[in-house]
Image (cartoon, rainbow, N blue to C red; front, side, top):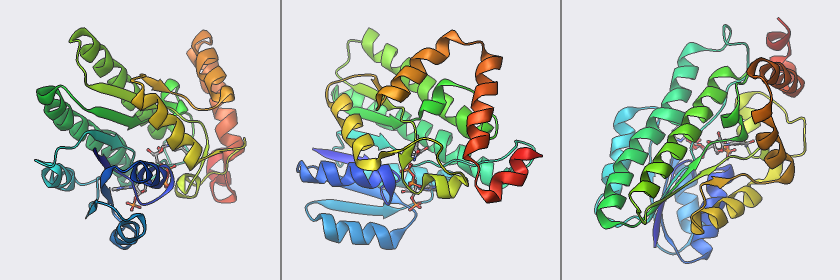
Length: 259
Ligand SMILES: NC(=O)c1ccc[n+]([C@@H]2O[C@H](COP(=O)([O-])OP(=O)(O)OC[C@H]3O[C@@H](n4cnc5c(N)ncnc54)[C@H](OP(=O)(O)O)[C@@H]3O)[C@@H](O)[C@H]2O)c1
């Protein structure tokens, strides 16, 4: 069995790689950090191929797909992603558009291309990494939350199309709350609740994906939150999320959040 993992160089992606490698899977790992990819190739052993790519660049996304073509990939894990913290008017436009390119466009392109291949052989699994943020609007991380809403909605819609086709192709969407990775450093926030580990998130997601479940929402607290949010008016929910995000700010984000 073979999997392509995006964002494999760190955090949840690295845990996916370690877990699948231990199960004897062949892997194609990608991320921008070529040195880290080569280290992982050495340390994981087994059949590991790596390809450095910046998924904010469309050509690189197609290059990753072309690299995988004809290699009989069984599983696509769209994990690469990051967040940006700050009032929407303040966040850097270029950084934010790049984030949309990684979180949405790259995931969209790879999902479509692999889905077509998987449908042809009536076999394959797509595991899209969204977030609990995908269930709501996110003041102070507006574009990040919106990007994860896209991932969630896209995955649910594809699930229903596959179900109607009685397809053996499966899609799962991982929606974790806080996970202890490099994510918060990149986003410029600190967590206000205790995060789960990347290993816990990856283990749970793989279990759900292998049993053909649509949703993978690790942790009782997050499950309860994502269930409960549907009964709240959107404006009240946005006000609650603002307060949660505001409490997560780092000293760097403080001024931005309070402006
Ligand atoms: N940590 C959390 O609290 C949390 C919660 C919910 C959802 N998530 C989601 O989980 C996923 C994994 O994040 P993580 O928490 O494991 O964070 P992380 O440790 O920062 O890992 C992010 C991964 O994405 C890759 N990446 C970032 N920008 C990229 C680009 N332009 N091109 C290619 N790869 C890129 C990074 O690789 P390179 O640096 O090598 O490019 C890295 O491997 C993300 O989609 C995130 O939104 C995280």
